[in-house]
Length: 318
Image (cartoon, rainbow, N blue to C red):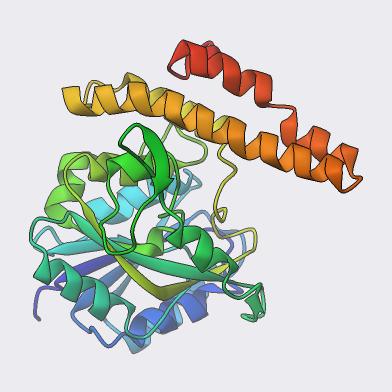
């Protein structure tokens, strides 16, 4: 049996309703040299039975069962059980679906760019029945990568790779299945942080981006299902989980001197950007006779102003 060139890891808990569609989308890939490990994280439904039926049809799938340990532990277990000789790795949510050419496109891009640590595309939302939800909205958000350059926050050109300077501000790789990474880069970056309760894949993408660029493809390759067994689509940049992540990244000893300087300067630029954005929304809401919307948009302005003065996420108090 040939060694799989790409390892796909699918953590799953109580995903029986959707995981069959997810695994069939993997089976249907035009790129066929892969091996897939499904880690059942203590499901109480018939998720293992659904997976076993597919394992019987296709030997490229492997099922591993464990007691409930959490999403990051399941991903780490799958990676450790995958074949070390595989060249690439990707993690897939148990309810998401790939386009048939997704892996072929991402692997081809990596072959063309040996300096890149990974490659990613765009996603669209689907509902529980697989129907489109607000077509074009999620892909537009993923395409709008905001990065720090020349002293300010600006939109990153679609012709440029995703880098540390963009990922620190916007989670354009919110769904794990958007990314195919080199296994060597993933090994250097380290396993998923099991202490993070959210933003764990964003954290992983940031650690990968410290090692090199992540090629960006302006193409929808994934359908992200908006339901309880999938991740969160495009997290609020002001949420507590995002602030914890920023605190971790800012204080990391893995940052180079150049990255430390960028974070310090970029943080103030990011706060200016948020102040201008929220002030504009607040004023526009008030002008159209919706003061409550204006209050909702502007209530965090003092916090952004204080964090601008601090120059780092120091107000978290952790």
